Amino acid sequence: MARDTGPQCKQCRREGQKLFLKGERCLTEKCGVERRAYPPGQHGRGRKRISEYQVRLLEKQKLRAIYGVGAANIVFLPLANKIKLKLKHESAGRAVVISGLVGVAQGDNPRILQEKLECFLPPGQRSKPESH
Ligand SMILES: [Zn+2]
Image (cartoon, rainbow, N blue to C red; front, side):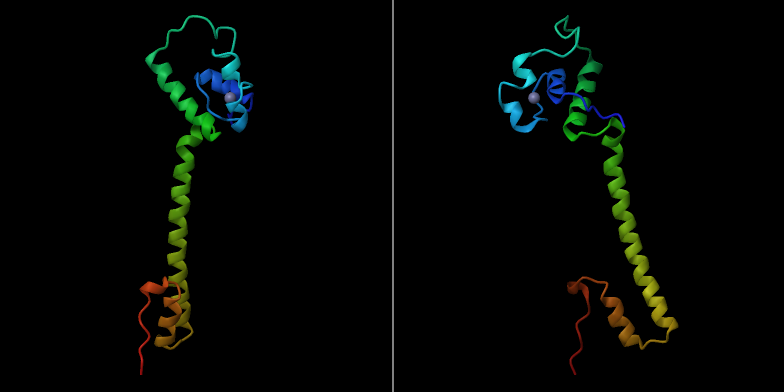
């Protein structure tokens, strides 16, 4: 994965602001931004002509640095979580159907089967027990 594992205050210097990747250390004067307030590298103090594209790229990379993930994962991690959640819901629904079918196949009493299946529902949505 293409995650930056180099010095973290170097990333602060690249962005030109403190990202607090080192936590407390970034509050002291030991932080790279305090000591050398220009971008890292041979051309760090060179001419400053920032293109429109560079502005957007830097914003994206700042986000990447803060979350500590590769560029692709900025898009795909939330997407993967959504899919996982959807699958979880779907498999829960199938479990209800399967236990219902098993109950029917075993010839369970419909009332008992209803109670069994209502166990899958949250307590507020279950039918009230009939008093005799
Ligand atoms: Zn720092």
